[in-house]
Length: 633
Ligand code: ADP
Ligand code: MG
Ligand code: ZN
Figure 1 (tube, helix red, strand yellow):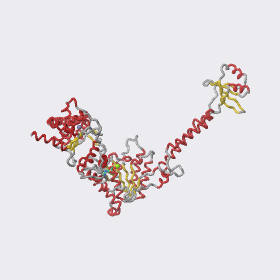
Figure 2 (figure 1 turned 90 degrees about the vertical axis):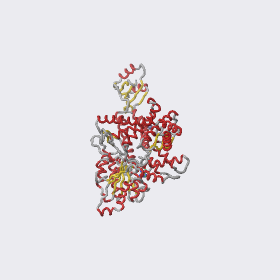
Figure 3 (figure 1 turned 180 degrees about the vertical axis):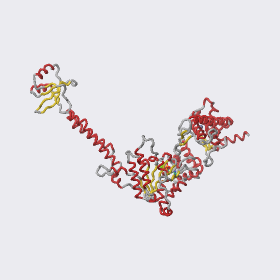
Figure 4 (figure 1 turned 90 degrees about the horizontal axis):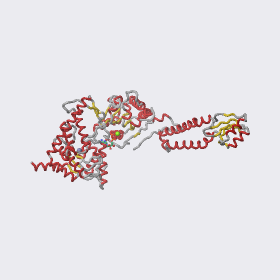
């Protein structure tokens, strides 16, 4: 990959950069030296300590002009003229000599008594040392620091002081000519619609005349939106790889600067460069860092961010689309973007990059499987089906985990088993073989998991059980039951949701049945959370309850990031919803308990089988379940 840096940065980067501490050390050294050399004399200010006898001699010789008793230090301070120049002296007090000394001083008419004589330096010196010198030091240190920072921010070292204009260098990475990112459209799988959209952009950059002939204008800005890890950044890189034009890439957070106006200057610089290099592509990743809605509340406005955004808006209006500058941006928080960014003429084409479906997952797995050595026949369908809801990044991670597992197991190629285990590792956390689980806990977990599986199997409309395990996981789970749908499921019926809630309560129901209501355990906490969420969504978002009909009672605030919801109804309705949720979960729980108690024999048999084997497949489970049924009937 060939990267072109701005020429101005070149000369600086050769010079080794000195760390900040270097300047501190220098300043401290200067301070210490000055302190040692200068301050003793300054502080004492020519105050000389003399012996008591010398003091008496000086009185006799008529040198002493003024005397004061310094009570605090129990000493005499006096001013005497030596060689015609007055100086300040101090001397200790001779005990019981007070009376005689007073007589002696009195008899000398030249000497005045005063309340105090300053034993510090003269006031001007004092002022200098206390006020002027520190300020000078601060100015010097400040100067050094600012020079240092200018250098770091990529200002030219010319004349040492740097040039303020240089602060705003965009720092965008520039990829030029062919295939600099090394990523091609073929490396991006399962995002066919997004690729189509972007291929048009690439085509436009290759042959702008064709579009000009008809009079078609391409959108100035293309916004890639979707959950994290779905390949937005990857797609942008692929455009760069295919386009054969310069590609400027910068992350939104790089515009966020310490000083007001710097971000705006960076935007200006970026567009200036882009205009010079047109036709070209400018890609702003994670644009929400600067593109957030501007504050309307007035007080808590963020000047720097707003200025940067305003500059971006102005630049987008300013550049000529026909010249061939195409702007790409990516975000996973489209709802937080400023509406001004999304209006026609700016980012008016929105390309969704959603989580991959079954086919997409298989395609992504195949793309990444090219990077690892495989052994035997691999059934990618199984892996793809087991990973519903996984993003491209997670799928890439699964392949890598499988390769790591293969190495750990002393093999030099990846097998189907490695992949299946890796899926579990990514979904449920790695196995914690070292965890010590007591026999009684294991027994409870076995019953709990079989409870889930039994309730799932005994209801129609639920996904088949594929695996049950009581090996603890690093995620904290002591065991789990895996269910995988046969095919891709895009819609879920009300019956399916209700069955799922019942299945989730199945673990606790089994505990109740075996241990009694008093001895149920904390093992169901995650089940409870999921069941509650489902029951709530059924009422508030899917409009599946009789009472509330098709009214949206909850809104999803950020659809791509966790999907936090907020209630959109009155407090009374909220209370009614709660009642409804209780009733729903309670009914499901009751149904689960019923199923468990009707299948007591199988519960015991399956639980002890699981306890012995620790991990059983869906097949083993179904075999035992069905075999029993046949012997009974
Ligand atoms: P984001 O949408 O958060 O920008 P990225 O583009 O950074 O996601 O994806 C991270 C990684 O996940 C990629 O480098 C790639 O290895 C993998 N990945 C994600 N989506 C895909 C896809 N559709 N096809 C192939 N690999 C993908
Ligand atoms: Mg990204
Ligand atoms: Zn459970």
